[in-house]
Length: 123
View 1 (tube, rainbow, N blue to C red):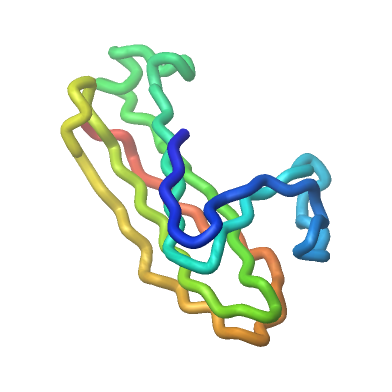
View 2: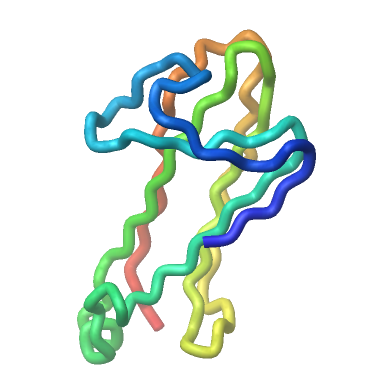
């Protein structure tokens, strides 16, 4: 993965951490915390490394599901956006999805919200 940031950058905290709210899944124990300026995280997942072989991707075209969770602090507003890109072997963009920008106001309830995107893998 890779991160970019302004302000004080990213850090990883143990749940519930300074955030103070438990995560909806007991399997998750840590979370990313961003700073007070624009922050971005990126992750590249190689489908071949994850067990998707060439014929499977070409003929079956399996469903790909991407999920992420976000929450705003109670004392600060923020913006959240999910961008998913399907890349070729040469990292050319074959398909792209970008969610609407979600504005979380200051004085929000600070609840965790799941966002997901799914598509058929068609190369």
